[in-house]
Image (cartoon, rainbow, N blue to C red; front, side):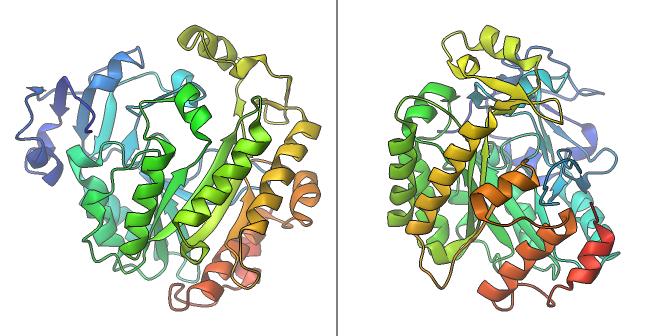
Length: 379
């Protein structure tokens, strides 16, 4: 079901854009403001959508990039800001000062920026996501902007688009000539967690069905077990989830799998408790990491990650494994869980590109050179 928008705004410069045209048939009240409508309460903002022009640099490094951790060096494209879903652990609750849903309708301008900046490093293969400040596909039935991005990325030699979602909105994507230049990825959790903490999102069954549809359409897939959450029976539920996923899709279609756990700034604890009084998220034992964010204590994270990683490995063929990595963890955690650690941020970027080159011939425009990645992105 499409998300219901009560108020629809668009920048006058985008009046002729495809996204605005797609909204012509909606019954939402329409405004053409001179500036972004500011709705301070994040829940109220979920019913208001603003289609905007590109403002400033939209293509940049992930904001979570931190030399204190092993980061994957993914780049982000600010195509969407805020999310219609209502996940209890979402950092957007106390991160943005405007709750209005915003989508950049000026897709051509974003693409031009990507082409210009990727041309500066022709040796590099860029992984680019639109999910940093919102769900990549939650508003796709209303705007169609992700479909436009897919078509544009199909012609790029050294870039791969990642659309990350908790939705099942893939109908717009299925008939596009994507040239395997787009990864459709899902945040995955047991249905127990989806029901309890990920409100308004698609069920796990619906997500699995959507995965099957994009796999049939030839898309690459990624899986994000992030955030993993502690709850009674988590071991069995995560084990069942992994097995369920790989009975629905082939591991040969999966490019990478990330593993991470609940983390948030200390001040967000109170926000979660106020916005989600029935949530149990904040009752677990947690400790502040080097970045100041609260995390489960290290022994518990090791236990969680090892259990999930071993389950994943047991479901994968020995000769064609997707690349598995930890998100926002330090080198010692990699050693305990994966048995090794990249020696730099650039090294992890290189390893992920090398995996793509080896598993999907023709996808990467040239064999990655570790020396170049290391020099450009040392720790």
